[in-house]
Image (cartoon, rainbow, N blue to C red; front, side, top):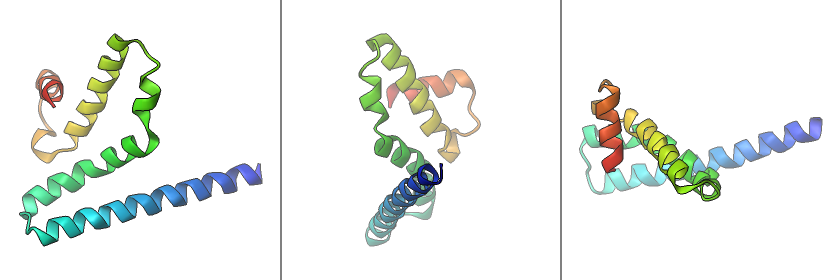
Length: 103
């Protein structure tokens, strides 16, 4: 059990290091191109979710599901990402689904 816990901690530390490096690169990009603060806030609000999704390769897992189920799950993922954008945080479910469907 100690080995499993240590292995999990090492994986989490490696994951956190990658996340921190990517956030630093995003910050550098925002600073270099003088991106307005409001846009930066929105980008950083959704970035952790995007990182988590890409690093864990959920889409590789989804390929094993039937296409109709892939579409449903992907829509849910998109809704979760969109819900982290401040201007969309308080929209109703129907609107959120419509926004996610076109992204």
